[in-house]
Image (cartoon, rainbow, N blue to C red; front, side):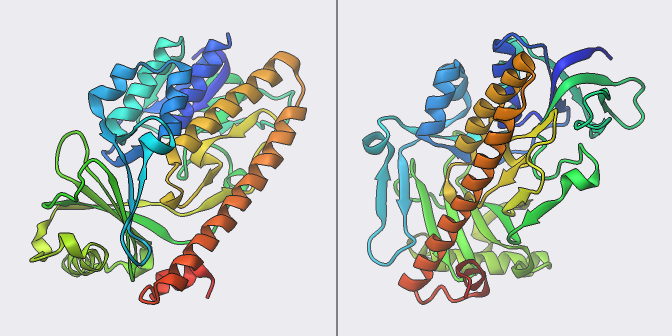
Length: 366
């Protein structure tokens, strides 16, 4: 395999956008992606994230082809009537409900159109050579594959499950046991083109209606609070859903929560090493936050933009100063956001005494 100035490992939103921006700055870039079909998962693209896509030149028709407009957020966390946040009024543009499988694939194709060489493999990549030792070559290899990609700089966009580097680089601080549990609904929330938030004793919910298929409900809870038995799990989800959405739950039976239950890791984490010489983690590979922030894709794009700027600056100047300063500032911003999340959870418990389950006690620090 040939050498490259920058190898970006991870074809999610952060990796694809970072690779595209580096290529536009004139660097030779290889984007290493997983060749397997990306799982379907509903996500909300905020108006701010949509503005970033517009700024970097992502074609609007690419988004409209697989997404559904999201008018705003209906917040039912607090006592009293729901609070409506209209994106058009507050951000002067709409949001979108995207399917992460097809959306991520379109971002990778966008990067390829910007001049990025895409290298797809079903085997996980790993790094050989120390990114700290400037005299040592950095190589990206795959199990059972002869040859390697050599790089002057490696951008780690492998997400939470990445194993690109040795163990000492992969160590993380983990703040919770959060998982996301997705189910399909036979009922449609009103209004249907909004994201609906609600809370129950065992966690919190959001529902979105994708461009095709049934409405999706995602339950955020702790992994140890979800029953292991499939039948008991479905009963538990139905009970929690009734608590969160009483207006949708009239006559709800356990079987009304249709389709298979999908579960994914959503823990809030922070990588102990946020920069090391010629290696930089971005997106969830650096830090992952509770989806309550509602800005996962926005944070991924911002991380990609700042990462591309810092890496390009280093490749052009050979100076690590901006990388060092940016790593410290990013770490401070993450800790500040974590404190804000804790305050928000504590406020919810204070205003709604019925949120007295173990999930909420952990979040509020009680």
